View 1 (tube, rainbow, N blue to C red):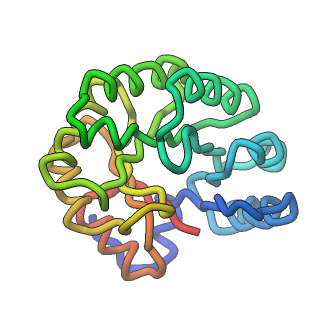
View 2 (cartoon, helix red, strand yellow):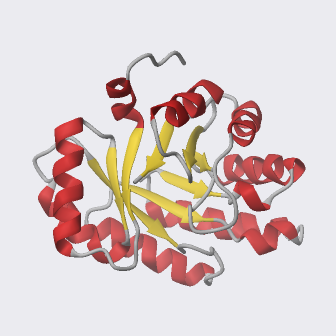
View 3 (tube, helix red, strand yellow):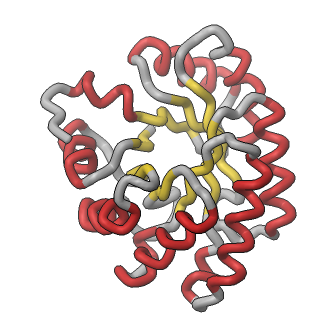
Length: 211
């Protein structure tokens, strides 16, 4: 994907605000920026979904919410209820965190059950699965992507930005090679400027998460 100008990246960006101290005023500013620059969505914590959905109800950007964030170590039942709740409040996309510990323990059955439950709860709303690529080996990244495809996810996503490591072009390339055109690939974590964004898109990402 050839991107020559910074403004061309706007359509791929989930404009993100997941800090614990984010206020309603911060969300208002985030949404105004998303409208101004033509970002794909805003990505906020569940507590801010209702406000963001109201602010953007007549605008183009959608509202993305995180689920099981940031560790992915919550119970599947909690992720399911959280997914249902944020969609009811107006979320148009869901970014869930995979059970990374289960993946690293090769408990693929548990990971797949967790993923399928959230995808089912989303009821057709796109689910992007955060695999924390910075914590995984190449073979684990491949397996994580395969499980996401099997579960019916819409995207695989590199990182929360709250864990160890950031998005890398090598991880994005490996994720894209694994999923082909079956899923989207979202690069998130440490994307700080236009050159970073362009590198991720050229590596195979078709969505970017950045604050």
